[in-house]
Amino acid sequence: THMVAPAHEALQCAECHSRDGLLKNLGGIYLPGAGGYRWLDRIGLSLALLTLFGVLVHAALRIYMHVKETR
Image (cartoon, rainbow, N blue to C red; front, top):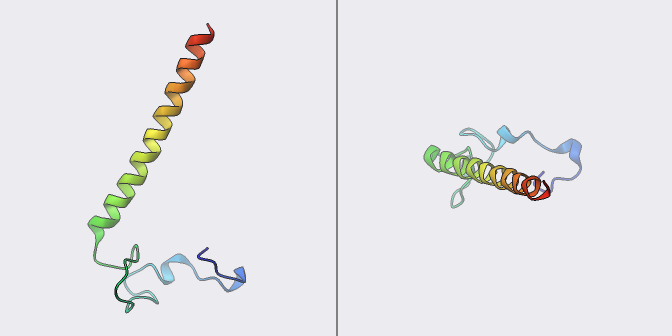
């Protein structure tokens, strides 16, 4: 959402987060999807997926242990 108000004036993500987006000439910041740092985007996505995987494994183990204890 990026704190855009009102909602009907909001842009689509790719309008800024792409190589030729509206913020392509904005220097000094990292804008996901807009720079030539594909490896950084992949590392970030990988970390997010690994975190989700870890949370799911943790939840599954807690459920398994709870069921095992109640038998």
